[in-house]
Length: 425
Image 1 (cartoon, one colour):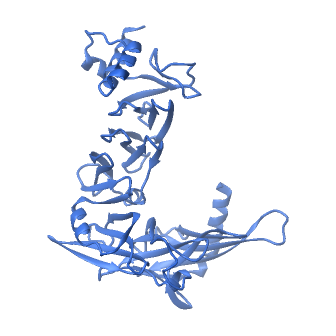
Image 2 (cartoon, helix red, strand yellow; image 1 turned 60 degrees about the vertical axis):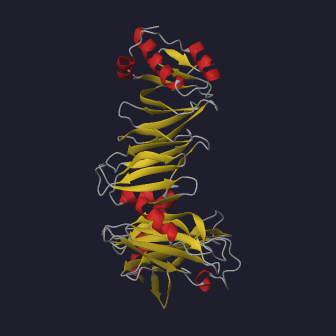
Image 3 (cartoon, helix red, strand yellow; image 1 turned 180 degrees about the vertical axis):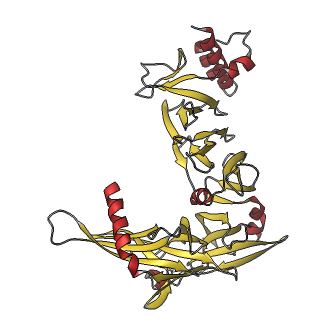
C-alpha cells in the first residue's frame, strides 16, 4: 500500500476512533492500524482521494484500501472533506472537485444517501449535532444564494423549511453557526448574498419552528392562554418592510379556529397582536370550528403586490387543500387578502384532486413584468375523448394593495403556462 494511502487511512481512523466505544475501538483498530510516527497535520492536508460505495451499500472504498469492505465497489467520486458523527455511527462527506455534493454514509445501516447536490456551485461548513442525529451544512447552487441544509441521519432524509426557501429568493444568505443543543440549530441570516454576519435564528428540528432568537422569550411570555401551537407554526421574517423581522405563531384559539399571533420589535419593547380566527368558518365552507382538529399550517411564502405574503393551508370541509393568502397590516394583524370578483371575499383557493376535478393554485409571472400573478385553475375530465384529458378553465388575478384584481387579459398566458407544466411532467 502506498505511503499516501496509508496516511489518509490513518487520519480517518484517528478521527473515527475518537468517538467510538471501547468495543468499537478494538474493531476499528483491527482493520485500521495506526502508525505511531504518523504526522496527523501533514496527513490532514492530504485528505483527498477516491470515495466509493458498493451497489448493495455494503462497502466503502477510500483511496487504495477499503473501509467496511465486503464486496466489489463500483463508481467513484473524489472526496474533498469528511467528518464522522460524534457517536461514530455516520460519516458525512463532501464530494466533487468543485465541492458539489454533500453525502452521509450510515455505519449502522450500511447505506449511503446524497443529502443535497449543487452542480456548478459548492458545499461545506459541515457540523454534526451533539447526539449525531443531524448534519448541518451550507450549500450554494450555481449562481445562487448560500443556504443552510440539514440531513436527519436517523430518518435518513433531508429536512427543509419554507422560510429557508424564502430567504434564498429574497437574496439573504443563511449559514449554520452552531448547535444550541441536540435538536436546535443556530443559524445566521445575512442582510444580503454574502454569508457574513447577520441575525441569529433558532431552528428547532423536532417541532419545525424557525424564529429570531431575540423573540424566543417575549413570545413565550405572551402566548395566548389555552392556545395549541401548530407544528412548524412559529417563524420570523420581515412582513411589513421595515427590515426588522416579525415573528408569526400559528395556533388554534380557545374556540378552535385557526389563529395567529404577530410579534413586532418596538425598540426594547414588543407589540403582540392576535388574529383569531384568521378567517370565518364560512370562508372555508364550515358551519363552525368544532369539527376541525388543526389550525393553519405554513404552505409557502411569496411576494405579491410588492409585499411578503403567507400562503397558509387552512382546515376546510373539502377534500382539497384550502390555501389562504395573508399579509400583515399596519395594526399588527395578519389578515387575508381579498378577491374583488363580484362580491368581495377572502383570498382562499383550493388545491388538489377530488374525483374527476383537479384544482390548482399557481403563482406565475404571466406578463414578464417581474411581479407574480395568482392563477386559480380547474381541470375537468373531457367527456368527448377516450383518453383521460383535462379541460382547463383559469382565473388569473393581479395583486394590488392587499387585494386580488381579476386579470382576464392574462387567461391565454395562464393556459399556456399550464400546458408547459403538463409537458414537463
